[in-house]
Structures are given as structure tokens and as C-alpha cells.
Length: 322
Image (spheres, rainbow, N blue to C red):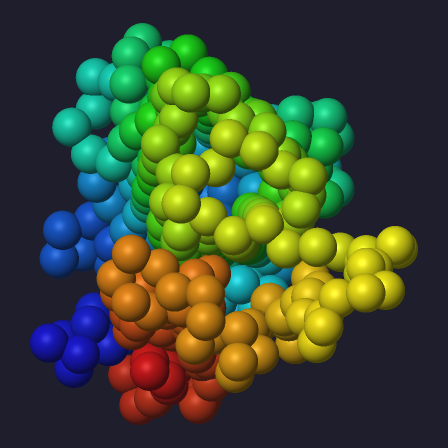
């Protein structure tokens, strides 16, 4: 299968000298492949794509466009393949499509998109969006509207809003603040406040003091002292008691929040064996059934090399897929 994949791409690459650009987008439509080159490669691939197609991007920065088709967009990994845009934009998908939008192994850099808010939404009704192994950076906020969203092994650094009957499932991901409704969060790290309704949050670490109402269901969360509304969870002090009891015998030294973590949201060994989720593994992104892994698990076009002209006058291109 990989050999067929390579040969089909190689045929498509016999188009000309633009193959020398290291940035390549390939468009797969059924068993047919087409290649595009340079910073505009993604825009060209999206223009030619139909719902259900697969666009694969090599490492590098690509200019983006408004995404209006339910396609799979695959990069080489977050912080390796960057999709940016030099003016305001969004993702608008028609609910008439039977396909879903899948964003995989990308960094989407909002600093180029020129808008305070970035929207991912269905235009006529609910659509399905999968975000995996992605980073979303430099936006004031991201708003999901009329979407059923699954976020896995991703790093979303901005506030998130679930609006207009959206449902958002977050698994082993690093998230900004959560707002509005309706979330199902499992084994995540939430770096901002949680202000949601009609949601399920479990086995997660929450860095900002947050209060939930009784429309939510929670379990086995690790929070800073001062939070409230989280059932069956741990509240950890951020500072020692300023007025300890001087008469207490063998006073217990409280565990403090900053003592629980190493780098990249890792729990210390002691904390990892103490704060366990509903499945018996540690809370946070390194526990659960799908521990944090930012590396995509699909074949990637790693690089291409122009080898010259063969005896039939066609361009020879060597492609490495891993």
C-alpha cells in the first residue's frame, strides 16, 4: 500500500520545477493524487478538494484560507506544520455534507488571521469536527458553533466557547479556559477558569480557581483551594497556613500546589500515585486510556528530492514517506 502511495504521488510530481520547494501539499481524492508546492500549496489543494478528500502537508509554514470543505488536513506534527492566514477567517462547514472535518498534526497560528475570535461552525446545522495532535495559538478565543467536536492530544492555548448547541469532547489535551456549554472533559489540563453548564469533567487538573453550578457532573479533579462545586475532587492549598496551631502535636505539613508538578504538567512521582482518576491512572494528560502523545500516527511525506531528468524527459523525484 505504501509503495502504491509513493508511485501515485511520484506521477503527480512530474509536473515541473516547482518540486524544488520543500513545502508540499498532496491532495488525495479516492485513488488519485495531486501535488502542490510553495507557501500557497494548501490554498490550491483546498480549492481543488471535495468533501471527504485528504490534504497532507509537509513541515513548514503554509498560507491558509477560509476552510469550507469537510476534508482531512494532515500535517507533520504540531510546531512542525503551521497553517496561517494574513486576514480574518474562519471554518464554515455545511451540514449537508456527510463527511467530517479532521485537523491532524498542525499548528494553527491565529496571529495572522486578523480576528479577535476564530470560529469553527456549521452553517445550516450540526457538523462533526475532529482535532487531534494540533496546537492552536495566538487567538483571543475560539468559538465552536453548531458543532460536535472531539479534541484529542491537542494544545489549545486560548479561551474556548461552546455555543449554539455545540457539544465538545476533550481527551488528554491542554486547554485554556472553558466557557458556556456542553463539554465532556477527561484527563485534561485546563490552564484557565472553568465556567460551564451541563458538562462532565473528570480526571483533570484545573489551574485557576473555578466554581461550578449543579448542572455539571464532576469526579476526581485536582484543583486549587478556593474552588467549589467539584464533587469527589481534591482541593490543594497554594500557600501554607499563615496561622498554624502552635499547640498541635506533630502538625501535618500541608501539600502545596506548586510541589505537585514538574515540567510540562507532569505530576511528581508521589502525586502521580496519589491523585488517581476513575480508571486508577493518574489525573491529567499523562493518565487515562490515551496518555498525551503529540506525534501523529499516520504516514507522512517527510521530504522530496529532485533527482534530475530521466531518459524520457520526465522529472525524477524521490519522496520519503514515514
